[in-house]
Image (cartoon, rainbow, N blue to C red; front, top):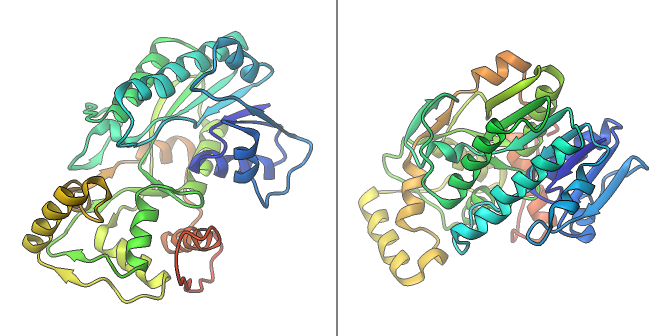
Length: 339
């Protein structure tokens, strides 16, 4: 039995789809049965599926024990992600405390493998180029701090014969509610423009390929404690990424605006609208900052290779966003590959 927490989230739903398709016995956790059912809409669900609603914001140790009971593998995808309205206490509770209690439950249940989804945000805001797993962590947000604390606790407490910590770069795909879908919406509305001179590059990964990476780790890694970056081996330039999104939307490439003008507009917009502004100085800096991760370790140790091209993965997210009514007047460029 495989337990997948956060089954209604971006990575959880992709992993659930993959393990269910493989015929594995799966237990899925979500805040409610309805949230998990919505995430799995359209999948062929067989009798090998068990849905256990547990709200980690209110759960106690017996709830975690029931989740872990009878499982050989736990993949912990649940957690509070980047949220400007959440304070450090919320990240402490929903990320660190929940991981502690689930890890304790895993040890009681004598689970063979425990996979924890961390984040490349533990390396800081950047810039960083081709950063490796042994680089010094520099978490600078409550989210990143909570994830690093989880990693450290798992290393200090042997919760399973094999503990695997994965640090994905920016993840996108069906179910995305983060930076990529926001970028797609802006380009679709014609409100996005390139910042003159932007040479920023990013490591990113499609959610379905994170599921591929998890499977590769479970099939190939030995006992012990492992920390691995997870990203597409090929980083992408921000300009190329945005132009690819525009092509898949059948839109013209975004225009180029001098950095000085953009920075002045971002400062004004941020002062008036705050986080609701389409572009703030913080968002602008993120777009222009290179943050790339080295994935040699996971490739060499597991043979991991992404199964979807960038363009195909973007098309898949756009198709999902149209179906969900997230985008307006959307036309997806046809592609020959299947994501």
